[in-house]
Length: 337
Image (cartoon, one colour):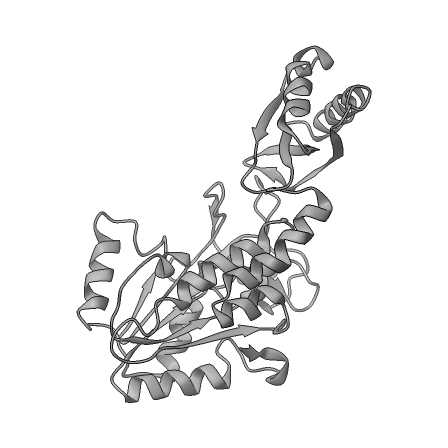
């Protein structure tokens, strides 16, 4: 575990990971780096007034791609050219903030100019067969370092990989979803399993600001049972799966006020007939605006399925939605995005 608090201002690759990469390359072995964020930087930020460039269709900042020389929304694919000056204050310090796989690749080339480096993410694998060619080349030893998003962790068997590095672990840990720790444990354990699959032992370094987080500690120990022993009581106390059942009601529409009012009216109607069902909300979705449509959600929670089913059976007669507002019923939602 690499505690980033011990290395202030270290940049995207901490000194311990940089040293481990150098030793791996010197030994003629391979390394795999996981950074689950595409693009060059998550956003551009004006260092004079704090402005950012946001997608006009979605409630999210635009990701900067230096390769494409474009700002891009990864939800609706809206694109625009990055401005040379801040569109709000006219300042000249409109700079990339954070790091994506493009920036990591650039940094690696600067640190290790003779290393053979490949990037695997959605942007480099859009062409037919591109993903397979990268995997084949890595297995054949044509690359020294393979970096990318979560697809680099998916079951590959590279016998010469002895180092796995996980960057920006905290972004996944801090997602507002009750399954975030579970997803972190699953993904990082899968990534860690790529190291030392051949005759030589492997090493895993996780860069984080939260080295004491239980999910990361159990990843480091390869201890699924220990993770479950901590995670499951928390789920049980709050009635979340597997100790309860969820239904997410998502209302969407072009008029934000209309969607908000419809969600409040629907929740008010449901509250009068909940029975054994708990209602949370209504509240804006994490992505309140997506592809031009405003979004509100109502979460229904119950210990058994039957009360939820009965409530859903009465849903159609509970309230009449206005024209232009759509209701999506997500039973057992996989995420709360």
